[in-house]
Image: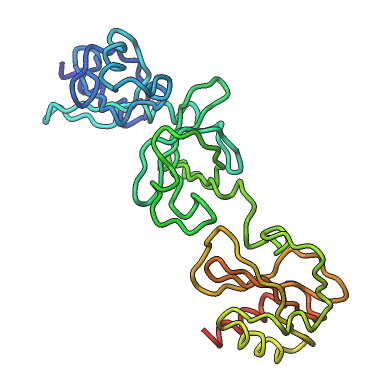
Length: 297
């Protein structure tokens, strides 16, 4: 038995994968044989594919059907003194499948647990199995202002996610749902709220529109920046998404015509255009806006 403990510790230290036979289960996990030893595989360290295949079944029902089968695991704790031998199927699966995942990949996925800080999501591979799990942080759930992740995602939901970061040393995958949608900070007002027949060159039109709170003083400051010859407040609309409660200003992707750029101001659900006539390039405009916001805010 002592030799088996030494072998188990060697498996742990070297990160070897072990094919173990499942002998039974209890309320917390599976009982797995390692030579003459019986170790423990906690349910949270099982590969998500087991539960994703049959989401309607309890983990105990799934565990019962696994008795007698062999699964690939890694030894993550081995202490002869404490008689503690712990396995992880997730770690073994990570070794096998993480090389197939790269930043920028898009996966169909299923939501596992939902926490205050985000949701753990299981990735579906081409063979239809869910091998790896990643985290969609609350900031990556939606472009909308998310107060509670549970208002948007629930356990078992099918979602599409994009891989935005991989920490291979810590076996962590960071995912995003919102990055598969258009970034509202790059939208034009026509895309957010379609309006037809409005002529931006009509100065009287912009003069009749009340600016968003704080926007008028920002425009006056922009007018004082070198290289900017004209700043006019334009169309306003209401949209369904709330990105920020505070006033934000950015350069839209509206095509430039006659040195006129379009800025978008957004506060809560209100969005408004600002027309900027300048010989500056886009990067210089962004820096000018940052300088002005830095002085005012």
